[in-house]
Length: 586
Ligand SMILES: CC(=O)SCCNC(=O)CCNC(=O)[C@H](O)C(C)(C)COP(=O)(O)OP(=O)(O)OC[C@H]1O[C@@H](n2cnc3c(N)ncnc32)[C@H](O)[C@@H]1OP(=O)(O)O
Ligand SMILES: CC(C)C(=O)C(=O)O
Ligand SMILES: [Mg+2]
Image 1 (cartoon, protein in one colour):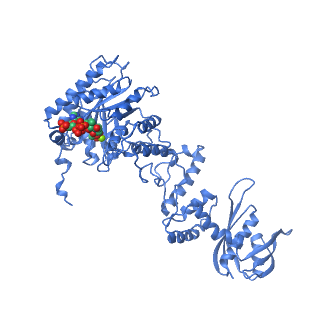
Image 2: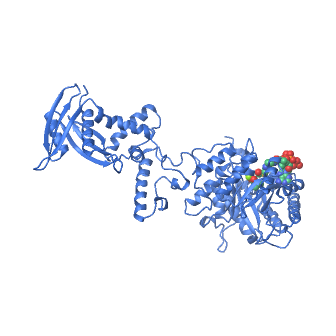
Image 3: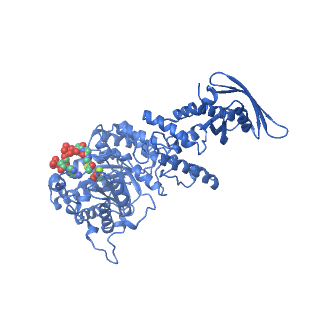
């Protein structure tokens, strides 16, 4: 690989805290010791940054659908458009201005470059909207200054100052409004301002500070109306600790810090957008911009679903409703026309599913333990502390059922198939029986190489163990059991051999099963019971009993299973099932 063509981030930009030695009063960095205690402010930018990365940008209808989703999920600030970019975007903002159902606590954010005519068009779009944030951006990194904007540091700063002043002036002119230059107020006009030094992560720290501080001054930030400085990793170029250092440096050094909301906007070029956002929050960021399921330019914006549910999984309320992740995903997929990967954290189709044997075993045991500990605590299972192996959160928290948690294929073990039979069909195979049936399942899955659905598993189970007891070549007809007055049981029946011969038999023993053993011996059948268990499959009047017999039939160890509403019939069927497996079939 021609790796020599690329440079380390340390050769591209000054990384402030890394360069600064630690002193007693000023540690090099504090973020590694910080903890998450509350959710940051979230801003979905799907309708702008996500939208600009789509082959088919959203029309008004798709935008409205996604906007509705954000409201339902509880987002309070939503970037809705780049109104000067297209008529569609402009019209969408106008359609919001015409609505009267946008909650008062929701702020609409609109995006504009530092170009006077585009800023004016942006203000035209938001006319009449009460809670607006105007988001101004210009690239500040050297390569963008030199190649794209073709301006020096001073010239690019001047471009930004002029644009910020125009934004302040237009805000002042809004009818009945109190703009940037006016007396501070949280009253009628709640227009706020945001500045993004695009490619912040490759911009010289002293320059970006100088520019941001100047913008804070122009917009006259105050506690009532703080300015947002949004520091994007427009193209991710370094490990997340570097971004965290950059953010902590800004957080410590920005002027009028209490009047600034420090925001981050990570992209995901190195696949570490989520880590960047998380470490940035530890480093002092108060606000995070991203997209649901990580849509966005190239490898995407940081994923707000993962970020939110990562907090949830650590016991911190994300303040966003993810309780129906599949409904959220459906809207996102339809609006973006891009599928969400089956392995996508928290929302992918397969992320709560185990195919592998040891994981299934652990999950199965964990789920049983969870149910028991919830009962012990006297709380519903969805309120009990979660500690099930291999499942970082309870799938039910995001509206997923337990149906797909365990799925069986050739990588699966006994625990998985036992779990499926128990949860789908109510049969609880004895522990010693599980590896025996598991081998049968593995032979089948190895042969066809496919997954085995619960229905197919049940069919295989029935065909192997239940049907031989009901409809095999060997039969036991008209068994009549009797309790003896002196104690013990007696049975009389006819053994129908596989070759059609009928042998009447009878026998007595301590219980029905031992009586049956004695009777069968009279027909020359060596039937030795090694283990017996039974349980009810369903409760109530239609309760079915499941009986399991581990036996040695003519020297062969076999398991028989019987199902019936009568325990005795279920037991006889289990015994006949064993005979059919242990004896010659013709
Ligand atoms: C990192 C980000 O996500 S930034 C957002 C990017 N989003 C988009 O580009 C989607 C929407 N954009 C558009 O639809 C179009 O780019 C428009 C309509 C806004 C402008 O289109 P055009 O006028 O044809 O300009 P075009 O985009 O080709 O060129 C950009 C010009 O703006 C300049 N420019 C780029 N960003 C900025 C900025 N933030 N502030 C001021 N000028 C800028 C460039 O230097 C270039 O100037 P030049 O013509 O003097 O060379
Ligand atoms: C916030 C803006 C400028 C952006 O989308 C980016 O830098 O990635
Ligand atoms: Mg972006």
